[in-house]
Image (cartoon, rainbow, N blue to C red):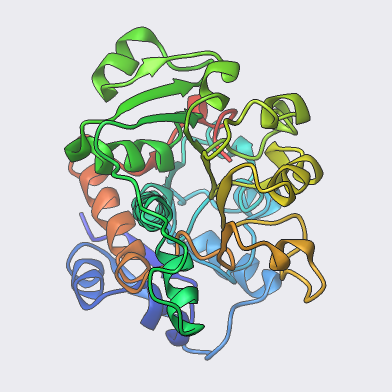
Length: 331
């Protein structure tokens, strides 16, 4: 039996970012890759004319969406792999009824997000941004402030998503107590993660709160004004998720009061405008939606997907497969 034909949609400029040399080796070893030689992303019409003759399609940022009409004309298609984040909005959910396997590199991006959360957590606890600003202003220990240690802290996490799980894993050496709100998390799963299930009110009352909820109709503004007001004085609030899950106006008001600190990577308006009130806050670390963006993380995206496709072909347990059961709860 011959190797499956794999249509690789990203042009070389994107492959340089998301496809390692090891990924190229794996593709050549296990598949018959068809590379995009156009120097640009394919159009939807171009993809429609090619997808019917291949068994595998690999996509990434910038790739055209795979439509219902394309699936109807693709009897050979067995696997779709996305070397980026969510596949929602990129392929129709009817893909599962056609017994086509779907793979996403979102769990790999989650690791990068977990590292981001740990980075801003440690930097905030030790007041590194404030000390940096003070020294730039010619001050030496002028404020008399002292940092805090992470070890032994209590951390509240909203949603046991893939980014939350990556963060939890990185927190293990610090012997912290972790409380998680997630209606889909069982007691058994919580025990496996080493966390305690808690109500949303309990989680929002922790001295450190990290938001990891996916953007779904069920999570829209789940973090209400009342819940934001529960955040303790002097606490740290981290959001690497989406602003749709919270009342951003209420968060801004609380931060303007100076009651607690925050590290924010996502905003309702992106890019953030120069007149945004968030830019005037000195108790907030601001980053431009880069929690999941690292050199190493991006370069491994397609490799992880291709490795998982190979596992599938060899009837081994997959790690990056998106199943129909997962569809309703993923971002």
